[in-house]
Image (cartoon, rainbow, N blue to C red):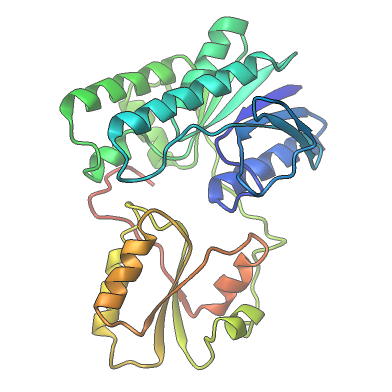
Length: 314
């Protein structure tokens, strides 16, 4: 089968979405499918094999044809909303234009968020009668509503209607949990149109290991009881609670709160820890997928946190 995948991130970018889509694409290719991926350019991380004057370049990655296009999305948190919205529209148009030139596609698979890629898939279905599968990982715009990021009622109504329109115009929706499937049912999506496909883990990499790792040595964790948060430092993760916990643990000099990752909230959180004078809270850069198992093995306790206001099912 000729499969076209649409995703804004893809390896070698170090993000969970990139990892999931990269492993899925490689697995499908290894099963004999012909897989093409359209994704945004990963700045400074990819050496193009074929480049056009439009900034589009193509590479072969583990048997998968990867087409990288310019990225128009604006991720700066303080950028005006209309500029961020314009960037998303331009990005979606670029994906659609690139997809129209991919020949003999039999099915498309898009990763959401952004929800705009669901719109691209729905348009491809209308224009070329190609079945479209939408892989929903985050419930947009609901999570932004829950976190108070999205407050304008008119904009909320518009985005909710776009969400429902996308769901109506795809042939299959995959979600990673039963809670998300129940959300789809509440939004009026027919149960036969939704499939629960749990996210996976590569057990060749993630397996029990000694806590005395090379990472523990490199990060200077010897003699510490390490409490680890490793992941995205965004609005939903409530890493403030972890930082504030450091104020109650000052007298426990053997306990270290280790925060590994990147995201829009990282600099603010680092500044907060500095202002509180917390020597027991340490921030470390994001690590590669290969190094991640060592980071987890180095910890004595791992945390997974979410904002209380986030009502979306996990």
